[in-house]
Amino acid sequence: MGLEMDGDLSLQGRLFLQDGAFSGQEDASASMAANLDIYHDFTSDFSLTLAAFYRLDSSDSARSHGDLREANLLYLAENWQLSVGLGRVFWGATEFVHLVDIINQTDQVESLDGEEKLGQPMVHLVIPKEWGTMEGFLMPWFRERTFPGENGRFRSPLPVDTDHPVYESSSEEHHLDLALRYSTSLANSDIGLYYFNGTARDPVLLFSFNQAGEPLLSPYYEQIGQSGLDLQLVAGEWLFKGEALYRIGQSRSFAATTFGFEYTLPGLGDSLMDLGLIAEYVYDDRDNGWLPTIYDNDLMGGLRLSVNDMDDSTILLGVIKDLNYSSTIIGLEASRRLGDNIRLNLDASFFLDISPQDPAYSLARDDFFSLELIWYF
Amino acid sequence: MKTSLIILFFCVTALMSSHAFSETAEEKGLAIAIEADLRDKGFFDYTADMEMILKNKHGKESKRSIRIKTLEVADDGDKSLSIFDTPRDVKGTAFLTFSHKIGDDDQWLYLPALKRVKRINSRNKSGSFMGSEFAYEDIASQEVEKYTYKHLREEQYQGQDCLVGESYPVDQKNSGYTKRITWTDKKEYRVLKMEYYDRKQSLLKTLITEDHQQYLNKYWRPGMMHMVNHQTGKSTTLLWKNYQFHTGLTDKDFNSTSLKRAR
Image (cartoon, rainbow over all chains, first blue to last red; front, side, top):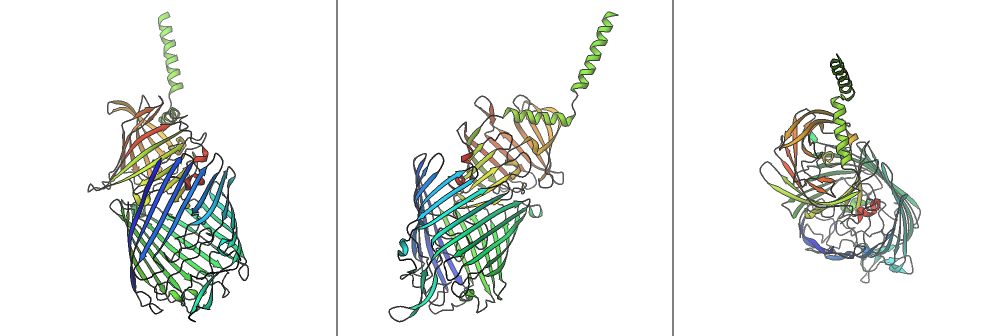
């Protein structure tokens, strides 16, 4: 009841093992970020949520940025709930690639995994019923994707001109996007089905020139219709996960799917440690030169070790193997708490034998370590 | 003659009745479990705050605070929602559990940073609950059907007359235990002490409960639960506060929509 306020402050250092492929790219960077969360309930059925984020980066000016992740009012009625404002919604089931998650724009400068998202302005109605949950979304304002700047790593060979986005819709960023979703939990599975109509979150990057005649990439946001499915199914020790989508409106229609399993070995060697074995596959038909993706036909394997100690130590090791090209990406995430209010994260990625035909080629020299210290208050 | 007839009659009835009521140790153990379950029936719902204190063998401590909401479900296991307030890095993380009398429980985890609901595997009964000495199967709703029973003896424990009995998990494959020995007080059927034996039949953990309080003149709840792991020297203490019964929770407070707004 009443007002709640908390947040965190973090320091992050990133070290790249090779010089960048493009001139001016940083070899090491330091940044500082803050999150502030405010929650207030006016009554038991009416509340306000605010979540603000800001990062200052030492070398990439595009990575120094802020966002209101959430700023919404939530009203709970007996049989439905309505929220209005900036919100965050996640759809999906798998661990490696998040194909069907579409409501929020990706805050691409934040992290390579694409899991950081921008606050999406929306009216969001939820009607939970015994036979499942119906959700409706009205999104009156589009958020553009963020991209690393000229000095940043993980960038395309040419810089992306985020100041001059191009839209297919004449209403540009004011196009009214719509989404409808049905989800339900059965005895051993969770299923979600949706339809989205509106501005694609992933732009096509068009070759163009700025006023000075320098080449760059212009983000072009098209109008799409997308149907999506996500599924989580538990069968004994096995967890099966799958996502699929079908999209129309971008050059040609295409389908994509990702699916796999997670199997947990509890109490490794008589200890409290649990080891999760993850295997997933992704097939994505979008790439015909128009919309490149690094996850076109890839096999993924992962090991998740939960130490189950006082400090919640976890280690996640993942390998992504492209089946069309020679490329292999290795990722490592290790994390533990220090004391009560501090968390330490160590991340690393290695790009091995990346084929020049692979859209991941621009990342080929971006092997890195990142160390992050987060203080929660 | 008449007297001896009467004596004989009494002897026969005594013999008959003792035969009729001579239940096996297994039957008596089950009867005790059913009685304990019956005495806790009809609570509808409750909410409570729990502080979990983890201690390692060097005495290093770590605390977690968790709020718990539980809904009684007729003819099946309870539904429960656990929301973490501390440690701060997991604030807002929530577990939703639908326990079942027979078969695996359904369990979901909500990760607030990603706004993501994940189905989790409840087969992992022996896994540690948030790094504590309590396994998932220890904190799960204790349904009669999940164990078989055997009454051992009656003895005094902490000055109270207690029923001492063994229980054996039905799901032997996934439980971390071969047996548990329980001290239940004869008067109120509260579990005062429990010993857990691991898969190698050796003593793994001991649970002691204290500060029992009665709510609504019927339902007993411990204020303190202390679990010691004899093999690692680690321990976990749960301190329960602010028990409230009949708060008006319904099924709608235990679905994915309410899980996503849990706070």
